[in-house]
Structure formats: structure tokens, C-alpha cells
Image (cartoon, rainbow, N blue to C red):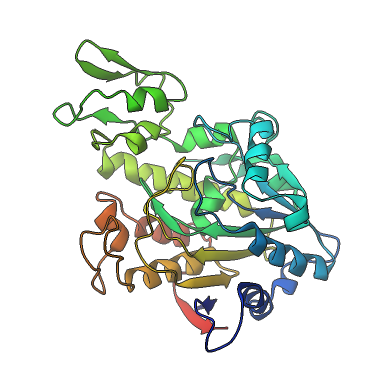
Amino acid sequence: MEDVYIARMGALSAKRNMENKIQALCTAASLDTVISPGDLTAIKIDFGERGCDVLVNALYLACIVRSIKEVGAKPFLTDTNTLSLGGRRNAIDHVETALSHGFCYPVTECPILIADGLKGTNLKEVEVYGKHFSTVKIAADIAAADSIVVISHFKGHEVAGFGGALKNLGMGCAASEGKREQHTALPFVKKDDCITCGACINACPVFCISLSGPEIVIDLEHCIGCLMCMNTCPKHAIDIDWKDDGIVFVERMVEYAAGAVAGKPGKAFYISFLTNITPHCDCMPWNDIPIVLDIGILASRDPVALDKACYDLLNNADGIFGSLLSDHHHEGEGLFTQVLPGTQPELQISYAEEMGLGRSEYRIRDV
């Protein structure tokens, strides 16, 4: 059974601010046993797409940076380039997006390095032993780092069910070609629901969607499976085969997560923020209102236990009236499956355990 540490929201009883809580978490979860003096330490963070404002606050990252520097390590903030159109498809745009979101040196006291290079081609082939891959393509500078601290904003995801530490490792540490390997789910148009508004045409980064007569047509031969079309459709008229494609997507993502930490036994540390828990991924250039109230910040040295604890805490929370939840959530129900029907959120936890990434049994320790 793995320990998962939590600093809960609310300050009246303990009279602690977020910086105090983060420092206490790093101490309780023994960050100093994961990072060694002189380590080049990757702080894996999602800098978020332009227009999204529910990211992990850069001020909170500064607290984590200080804890790492106190050990004598040399941290750098990092992320990888995306497949979708927007402000993170190459390293120049990506750094500018990060700076616009407050991830700048005067705030974090930490440099930024986009781990897969200028155009997403800087990668290292890493061996894994999964159903789908024998090697995975990990961003080279993450693979080269001596240790890694994975900072995740826990939220929903349209195919994986939720995005936490495992998704931050699997999709977030993959070079661009590795992201393409994971995106196997191909979309189709539900013609009865489509209003031919063209939102999907504008969202497609490889221009494989067009209007042919009265219908939207997707060129599946050139589709990269990024699902930006599905995410932007206002009528939910674009879908995937959840039974087959959804399962394969999650399994491939988890195999990439295994590759991201290969060669770093005992050198990975995970912090997840259960704040601003929105139903969609931070790669969207917008965000919906949170579906539950803020819960807290969690830390562990086990990404599987951490994701399972986050998922359980979320499912035991009450839904916010007016969010995508149709009514207040009842204990024991799958919250993300209510707002993202068809997803199987627990699959990534069970497959990650099968892949040897950690254990799903955990013990919550309040800090």
C-alpha cells in the first residue's frame, strides 16, 4: 500500500497558505530522497493552451522550485510540443505561451526548456514491454534528466476519462511522433446531429476536414487522431468508437508513461492539484466551470496510487450546480463518466498497475 499525502483546501483551522501547504507536502512525501544534489531535474508541467486559465498557478511552482533547489539540484520547467493548432506547436510559440501564463523566471526562478526541441523532433527511443509498443519516443531532454517532478492539474479528458499524473507522463513526455503513435482513435460524423457550422474544419491542424455538398467529410487517411474536431463541435456530432479505439488510446498512453520514467527508478516525484477541476483538458483554448469545489493538493512517489486517490476523492465530492453535471453527484458514482459518457477512467489505473508503474492501493495521509 502506497502513501499519498494531501494538503486539503481551507486555511482557517491550520492558518496555512498555499506555499506553506506545498512545502509541507514536499517534506512529508520526502522529496529530498528522490532528488540528489547536482541533479538536472525536469519539472514536467502543462503550460496550457492560450485561452485556458485553470492551470496550476506559476506562484505554486515557485514553491516547488525552491524545495528542489534546497536539495542542491538544478531544476528546469519543461513540456513538449503539441499536435494541435494553437500556441504550443513549436518551441518558440510554446515558450511565449508559457510566459504569457506567468511561467517566467522572475516568478518561478526557473528556466524553461521545451523537451522535444524546436519542432518536436528531439527524441529518444526507450524500451518498454507493452501490448502495443516495444519502444516509445520520449522527448530527449526529459529522458536525459537525472530526476523528474511531475506537476499535474487533475481534470477531465475526452478519451482517457481524466488527465492526471499518468497522462502527464504518457502524452506529456512524448515527442510529437510519439503523440501521433498514441492517437489511434479516428473520428466519425454523426450526420443527424451535424449542423455543418464548420467549427471542426477550423479546428483541424492538418486540414483533413471539409464541407462536401451538405455534409462534413473527414479524410481519415490523413487524420492524425488529435480529436480537436470532437472537442470543438458544439453539437457533439463527432465521435469515436469508444469500445475499441478508446481502450487502445489509453493503453498506448500508459505504455508511453512507462517509457517516460524508464531509467529513473526512485527518481520520480508527483504532485497533483485537485483545484479548478474542469471537465475538459487544458489543451483546449477555453475552459468550462469546475464540476466540484477545490479539494486539495496531493503528492506521492507512486503515480498510480496518486491518480487513484485523486479519482476517488473526486467521485466522493458533490457536483457544482450549473456545471456539466446534470445534478448533484451522489457518492459512489463515476463523476467523469457522467460528464464524459463512453470513457473508462479506471482503465488507465488498472493498465498502469499491470505495466508496473505503481500500485492502486493507497493510504491517505493528511499534512
